[in-house]
Length: 258
Length: 304
Ligand SMILES: Nc1ncnc2c1ncn2[C@@H]1O[C@H](COP(=O)(O)OP(=O)(O)OP(=O)(O)O)[C@@H](O)[C@H]1O
Ligand SMILES: [Mg+2]
Image (tube, rainbow over all chains, first blue to last red; front, side, top):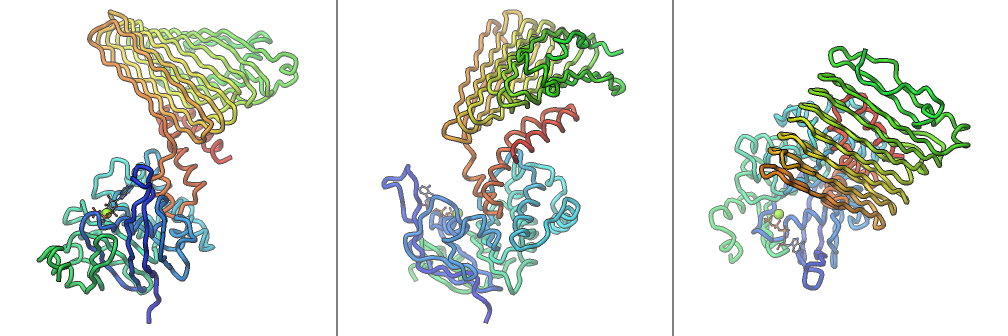
């Protein structure tokens, strides 16, 4: 039996925003999902279903309140941990919209992130030269130019470059659970292959993936063990990879009515 | 011999005039360091305990075609020093003066500095001012673009906290046609610090094709920090391009979350973003020794 990495149980979460009528709005309405080590799960679902909200809640973004249920990651209650602690414990979210950080040097950012994790694990921090050696191999694998290291994080990156940079971070940080939020959107066909290969390289017995996507095409490259359909804050249907194909052929309405 | 003349301090009063001022002359062709001019006052504490008012008037000329650098660092004790000075620079045809000022002394200093720069045809005046010191500081720059194609480039960064006050003032007079100016100010304010910025472009009737840009960006790190800004345009020529803007904000929550999601602890994430905001303007400093000094000081200041 492989180890359970993530258990989401009857998760209800609302967004807290002053601009909303009652200052809050329920987005996740009873999510249930279990990810075991070694598994790849895909989540598909119509716009506004709450997929990115799920990613944000798992990663620990402020502004959400869990009103019922909860999430256990590696035997720890996620609610007890801040976003940075979750990340250092091995949870990684590749953003649907990576954030531009003008003036924050990419190399320094990557090294700080890696060393934060190493400090947590009681490992020695990498110095500049050691880091450079390591990052070069990752850059090469993703066919990214070294000049990215000199730039500000995500600033002026094209849509596809931002997504590649997310995967670079994932490869560097070697998370236990990687949540990829529409990492395939905005990638050209070659980039899709490269990014998929990056993900496949990381597939391992001790690692789980939660891949949010709108397109079956990605799942041709990254073969999921499970496909879930999410609608209105819940998982409404689960199946194997064939569910994605069915969805592509028939659309959400038919599948959900069935 | 370098053509740029700053009077060597001879009198006792002159020697006391600046907390610490290093002036280096570099010739354009071969980076030749002359004997630096040091006006120490940080180390002359005995003198300062008796007299806390220091003032000086300085005049400098940059001869046609020369490139000169004036690099001043005001630092040190005593805590209650007052520095007030006025500098006048005559920048001749095709000459460039790069003037870097680091006001990084005690938090009780009072600083009032005034610069008057007169620019001939194709002359350039670059000024960069970093202020982290002084209880109250006021820096004034009056530039007169008297010759065609003259260019003024002013960058200021105030990084202040507690009850510090910093006042930056720029008055750019466009007199000849085809002149350009770039005025960029950044303020990072913590505690109940207050920074004010006033910038004025006065475009005279003859100054057609003036191209001028002014921007002030404020980063507020606390509830109590305050900022005020007043950009002013007074334009008498009809074919000009003048723009100005200001932004005031706090650290971006999305950016903080992105850093947190990569495992970076909150205090470190904040420091990284503040530093990025500061270094963005510091990175415009092309003169390498000053760039390094400014960069290092910002880093030390923010990680103290
Ligand atoms: N700050 C907010 N205020 C109000 N509603 C919000 C806020 N943030 C998200 N929502 C709403 O929550 C719902 C779920 O959004 P979410 O981004 O999770 O959807 P999604 O499934 O990722 O959609 P997509 O496929 O388009 O990326 C949407 O209806 C969205 O409008
Ligand atoms: Mg989304």
